[in-house]
Amino acid sequence: MAKVGVKAIVISTGNELVLGQSVDTNTAWLSDELTRLGITVVEHITVGDELESIAESLSRAGKSADVILVSGGLGPTEDDLTRNALAKVLGAKLQLHERALAGIESFFAGRGWQMVETNRVQAMIPSGCDIIGNAIGTAPGITARIGKAAAFFMPGVPSEMKKMFSDSVRPGLEKLARENCDGIIVRRSLHTFGIGESRVALVLGDIMARGRNPLVNCTVSAGVISISINAHGENEAAANNLSEATEKQIREKLGEYIFGCNGESLAEAAGRELLRKKMTIAVAESCTGGLLGGELTRISGASEYFKCGWICYSNQSKIDKLDVNPKSMAKFGAVSEQVAGEMATGARWQAEVDIALSITGIAGPTGGTADKPTGLVYIGLANEKETTVKRNLFHGDRDFVRKLSVNTALSMLIKALA
Ligand code: ATP
Ligand code: MG
Image (cartoon, rainbow, N blue to C red):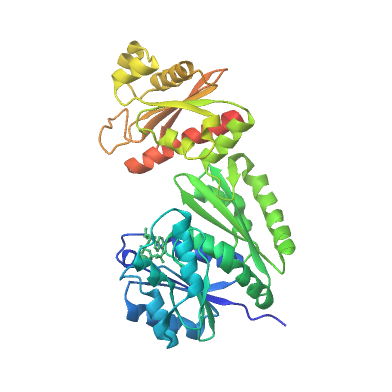
């Protein structure tokens, strides 16, 4: 007999969310986690810091969902109303929860901080509810039953919410899903660069057909196309088998464009290859103003391969700092194949590294001319064998041109290291 499945509603609270000042990333993250467990997310609710609205959302969710996940509003201040709203819905009183208080006290003691009286409020829990320990923050989480639903209340701070969910909420939901859902979903993603979205769709053809299992989807961000494979199977092994078969097909068709999987960025893939080949790198940037160096050094452990970088925005600084020949500058201009090549070669010699990347272009929206339009970007790569320069014409706003320049440079680097 087919199992009925588990339905979930995800609620986030916060004025900053409904006012559009912050983007609600918690709901996206939680929904992805639930989907992977085979739990169906049927609704997202975003509600401001208002007791009545939170209470109304909770009781409504309790009528239709099996699981309710709530984030935010567990702090110690006046606008943190989730505890009060829950108490109202349950018709319960807020009581001092001794274990919650002990947890908050030990959080402060462990850091040598003085606990302020307002933090006691975070240990006030509706009677009959239990708490969820918070290893990295003050606010304990709360578990409750609302109507037919099991509800879990977590902090709004994304890092605290993720840790609490992973440590204390997911294991129980995994069990619930196993008992009530027909199988699970395994999700993998493959990341490509250097090929357009419509071309990917054309090449993959039926693999992307709707209603197929695994279901294959594409998303695009600054030239990176991520192909997600969502395989549904009655157990993990069955789902993995389906997923692997589809992955193999995709790799056969798009292998040359695939640089990484499961969230790996271009910079991470480049870093991985630099480590593998024990090579060092330096960057010389003009129109990207340090974004390339920023991407490469975002990764912990980058000191193993990243030596240094220059932001040479003016023509003279390219000559002074990177040994660009003044004659090349005068004859071809700063945005040219020659200057990009000399920037890369100069950076490689100055930094004494194995590989250097250079970027020089016109990010726009002003500064373009008929023969050097906005979006024209030269990217150089110098290694022990040679210096190569790629001419690119990117279409988009300043931000997009700069991001695409960085991604193209990283992709050239990955290819050179392959
Ligand atoms: P807590 O329950 O931990 O006290 P809170 O809602 O009281 O959370 P806030 O002070 O409102 O905490 O938010 C703390 C930080 O977490 C803020 O930077 C806020 O933007 C962020 N945050 C809260 N909810 C979300 C969410 N749904 N998605 C992303 N960020 C969030
Ligand atoms: Mg809040």
